[in-house]
Image 1: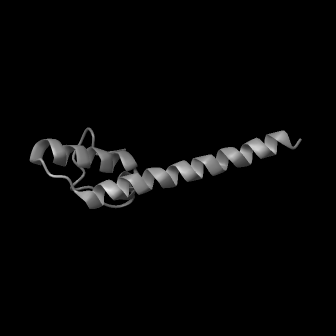
Image 2: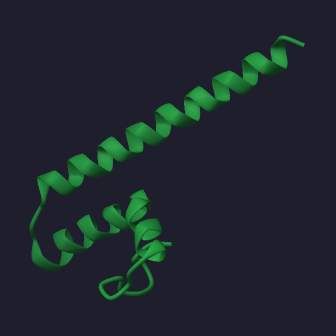
Length: 73
């Protein structure tokens, strides 16, 4: 779920939380602000980069754990 296909301004509750934790929602918002308004929001870009780094760290940790579990039969 992201704001790529529909506006998310009026959405509340759990669905709004799911949309807000999706990093692509923030990437799409940053691209829209750049293309439509010509502005770059540094705070938004830093948030997106940090979210992708966090996802990469979690994914690498999980993959490393699974690899060690498979190798130590």
